[in-house]
Length: 170
Image (tube, rainbow, N blue to C red; front, side, top):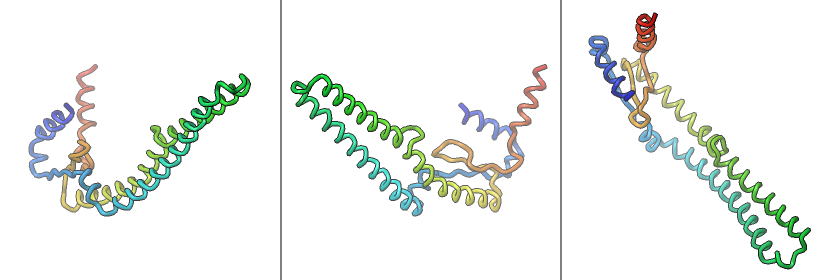
């Protein structure tokens, strides 16, 4: 819907866009084929492997405690059972906290990904800005993300649209 509205708006501006250049990029392909991405991916994969090993170690410890408890529960006193259950609960919480700290929405995985991707995005943006100015592009879209990644100054019609809309609302 937004795409149709944007295309209609662009087409309706007539002569202003008749001489303007419009381009697009495929950021997914850029990331796939840019050689610098390989180094970032190796670093990322190495970190993920370490986190997976840590998670696996914690899970193994938890499974071991649970298995041991199951095998010995008939022979344990009530006091010892409660102690073991508390150990298991503590280990489970440790495991779940670790998993959340790594793979959660603001976890280490997301932070590391952003840390490694941001410099590449900045390089892409520098090149986009340079190409936009040097080759006189009015606007550049990203085919992968479906958004605008470069727009020349003066082509944003938002203020004019808001102004005209608000004139009709008194």
